[in-house]
Length: 75
Image (cartoon, rainbow, N blue to C red; front, side, top):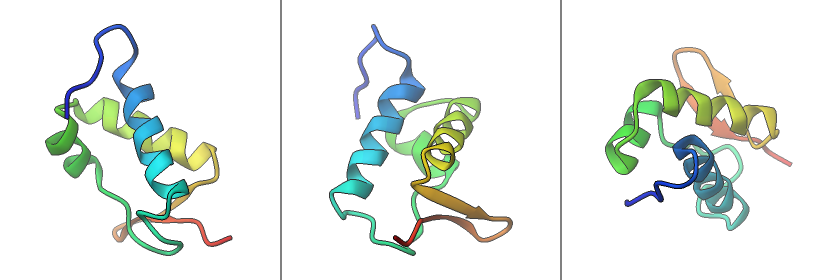
């Protein structure tokens, strides 16, 4: 997916994943894409993917289980 050059990439990817969660593309309790999967889909760096995941956690949209992945928060 092509990202705009005039806005931070992490912010754009964060908005896309957050919208997918809100729209139900990822259901409560479902695993969201990993940092590696975000890299492949959006062509971003590892640090950028980690920043996306951190922002999603801070927004209360996902939680991370070490060694298991990140999942959509159940409401």
